[in-house]
Image (cartoon, rainbow, N blue to C red; front, side, top):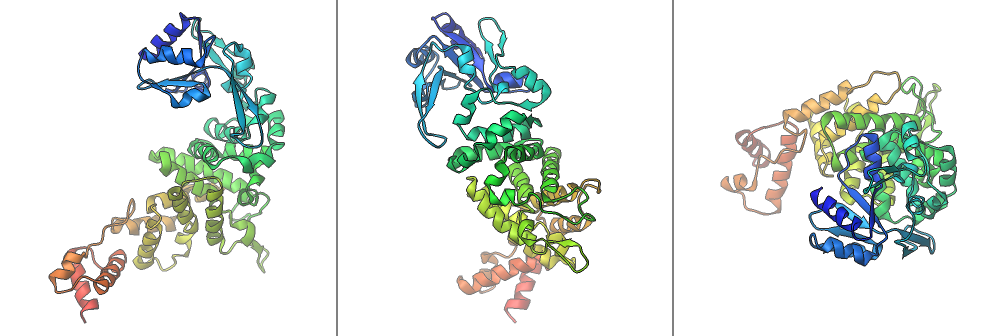
Length: 453
């Protein structure tokens, strides 16, 4: 912060006027920590700001075409006010016009939400709040700042992720503005789209984000998401209601479980997004049986297919998508593992590990699913606990164990490297995962019994 303060003081004494803006101010008002500082400089051109910044270190030239200057080793970004004029459809279809003489109110009204339109005058220390951002934070309301909101459709997804992060609701008027923008969802580039979904998944109350999707009509922008709305479930198993309400409760449970277990980053995103996608398939598999009960046979496999298409449509990285799809497709395994034997559990571990995820992540989603059922008891189902216990016996909860029988062991007893030896090693690994041996001696005994007889 010493460098930031020095740059600000220099600008303020060089005919400029610095205001700290955006998320830093919002989080300060909310009592949250935010180390990213955005400084908007009035009264100076981009080149003038860059010249001052260059006195304190190497400046990043990349952002200057957007009116943004940063200094290596400094956590702040310095920008000048600009007007973004929409030139067409899409998140990037804008022309930019820098205006260092713009007023602080004019600059603030171009920000997305009132809570992000506040600023701190670095000369006086005063919080400037022209649009009532502090009141909206106090009320827990997401409200758009001005008519400029509709110029950028990605702002709707920002409302979703802010709701997930802060537990806020969206104002009725803002929801209507967002509803009128649904046709622009498809024009958002995958990169900014995924950035907002990732923040949604890292929030503490993603169920609130889902409520914003519903209120704005954006849930129907993705068939897999909108398809969950209105799908009924059997009241005996789901007293909380249909698939949409169940999923809202499940994603909130998933967030709490991740908090409990200290899970963050991509691991947290995988758990919450798998929780979000786990019952998508009920939209196409639900039916009423002869006894009048609602059943959804095969919804796990159907949900995995839908999760794949949905995650791709929102620009999710392939590694995260693969893990989400694997967990969704296996989220009923503990129910179907009726014989409680090690062999099917071993095969399950190999299937789920192939995607890059693990039993611990799967178990968190299963626990969240079991916990998102209204008044029914929360926690891990007994059957799932048994699966975790069996995985623990072979050291395969956090990651699959390494094969015990290796090529060097096979060569030592006379095998020649090649496809035949490779096939035996793979079979031995399956036997190991089934609990048939747990050290080299017993592993080689298995090889001699099964491959040399």
